[in-house]
Image (cartoon, rainbow, N blue to C red; front, side, top):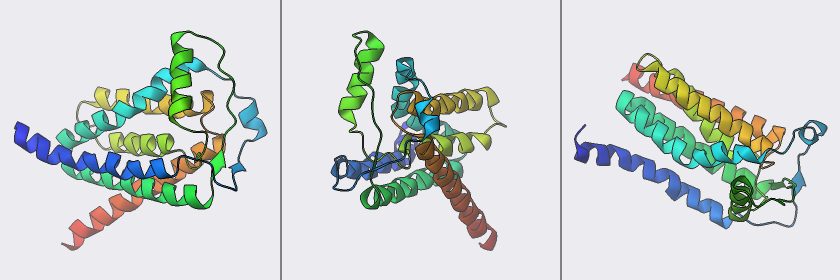
Length: 205
């Protein structure tokens, strides 16, 4: 793919950080904050090593989208649309129904402890439902299902990493099980809806 074409097609990805900048306006506590912690969440251990896949999410989404762009441009576009719609719906939920997650105290000074503290400092413990990490990761997971015919091992590696990211949200105490469930339902629903509309449009055309 020529560089000019790559830059032109890749520019669609810039919409994601642009839309995501809205989160900065919501990343603080409101008057009424809800907690969705269940007894099952309390049984999940705190594992700082999961900070590695958690941080990898920031690059994973764009690497996967570039992969989609090379494999199937339509898949690339409606994956971006699904993510953007998911972000906008999540922001509305954050504004109307803000949630929080209690975090453990970080006592160590090893690299995983430092990275976890950095994540905790960067992202306040609010706006947890639904999990954006889970929402976007699951959309990428579903997208990979449609690229397995081409270089399936690459798709499997990306899917494996998305699963680790989803698990990391729980083991780092960034999200509850209900946050994860909300992200899975919203991400899966949007992907299927956008896919259906895309198929219906081309069928009618």
